[in-house]
Image 1: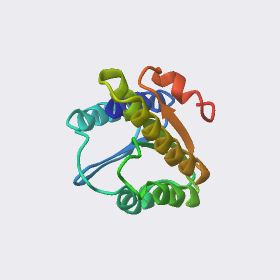
Image 2: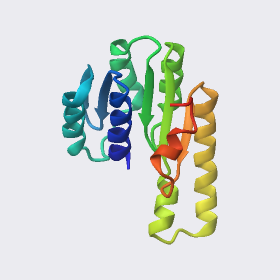
Image 3: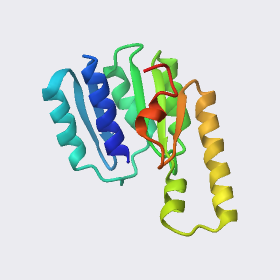
Image 4: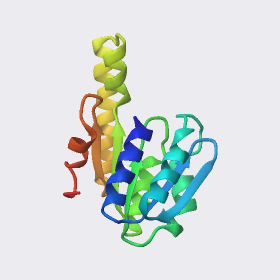
Length: 164
């Protein structure tokens, strides 16, 4: 879900003739500098083609490394389930503090799991509450947070924020 949403967001902003950069992290960090046009879109698609949801690099390390490369005030999209990385709130807070408009697009892995397997209702409710608490913390950091459900079209989810 994350790679498809990253490609969709890139296409949206590139069609508006905005510059788009891409940072991908897992065990390491890959960065594609900002550019515009079809060539940039194909570079982004090529970069996303090999992405697997794995690795242990914390988001805080990524933002510390990349934030100097972002223009002040530029929008930053973080696509993450926000699970298993305690540095996400601090990383988002730092980006907001540096003047960026931060949007966290968080695909709900809990709801996806519920669609494809049987999760006991009580376990689901506890996991859902924990997720809601994490997302509320992020919203309190000054970011726009989109709790993206697996049955929701990405364009519907994006329209919830800032009139993009």
